[in-house]
Length: 127
Image (tube, rainbow, N blue to C red; front, top):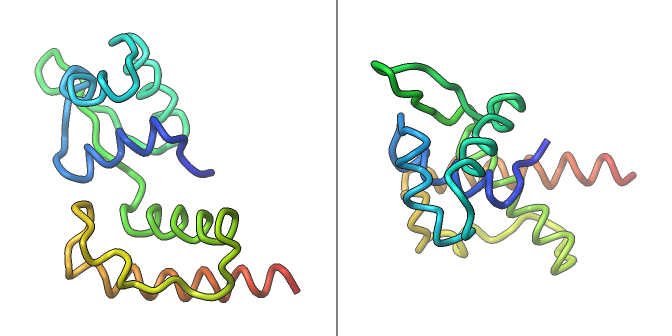
């Protein structure tokens, strides 16, 4: 199961810094989605049900951490986008990720391997 766009935005915030409270996450994404605090909490609740995040208590506040692996999740999104939108067959060039603010240089090699593996896996499924 792949995260929705709002879920992915929350995951990206958590991958940068975690744990975080629902309020901290909401304050950063409210302008992006123009939604209420209760919508953020409901999205986090659904993400917990899908096992995308974990929830714990720190004092009287709920805190959240990402459970989905950043590089695996991003590789799946990138491959899906390339195949569905641009109809690219074959692994994606890793150079397109080098200026990303979300992944660092040490993660590029892991991403490249995952993209190649995903391409091989997709090729087998289509045969």
